[in-house]
Length: 329
Image (cartoon, rainbow, N blue to C red; front, side, top):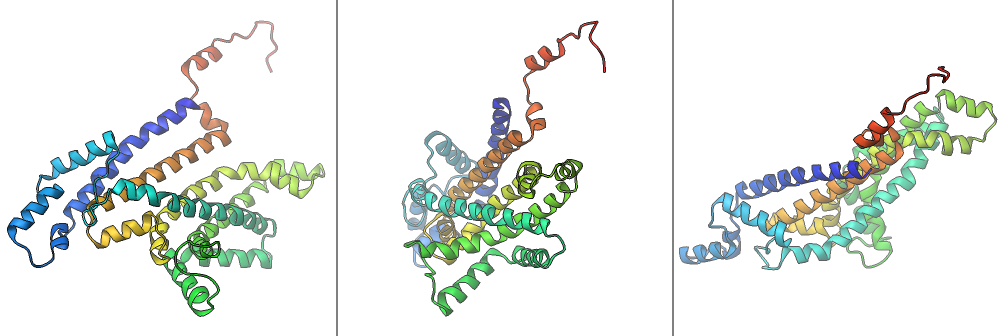
């Protein structure tokens, strides 16, 4: 298992390097000048050159890329905001826990609601309940996060005035952001669970368990569900990435002071340091979450774990000699 985890960790390094180079290149080549954004329309060439030198924007592209990479790796320094002159690392450290809470709670809601609905839909196949849940899942999966968030704001916040639409100051203020951020994941998880469960409950071992007189709840929980976990975990891992990306829109619409709102503000003000820092951090989080999903794969399916058995163990297993008088089946 440790060898498997180490190998997966090694893959994170080139991925993050690629993300850093791509994001830094895009922000460097994007039209717009942060120096002009700060100075406005009235400035002299001397002021422009002085401010560009202070920001380090007068250096060649490769020099800027290397300086950013060196400071990030050695000091965990993502630079300072070009507009506020505040450390990006400190801002991200203050905002990141909020984004993590919103993301983890959204994924938890996805699992708690999506899996039972998928199992129920598979058990009641072709019933009115199954048809209704399938149609609802298709509709929710097709609605983008920002549309769902705006609908929640208009219906429950503006029209009915049941729930607050900005901030996270109270328990009720969490309802709309989590709902908008998790409904699409609930729909995908429901459909995936239903499809996988329908394949599993038709297997011979399930029929054997039914013939032995076991209860349906035991058959589902002990026999069917464990064999559905790998596709469901795959679906959940996709939902995690979707939730992290969707948090940018949800945090902006609901004015949640997290990474998403910080990134949106940085994009609107051409703040390259903010954009680079937020995207790199979100990419790293997605890589770590995918690593955790791979570890769960290995824990669920012994065949994956067996691929990373050490050579000594394999050689030891191959060196076992069967006695001559042993019966051969």
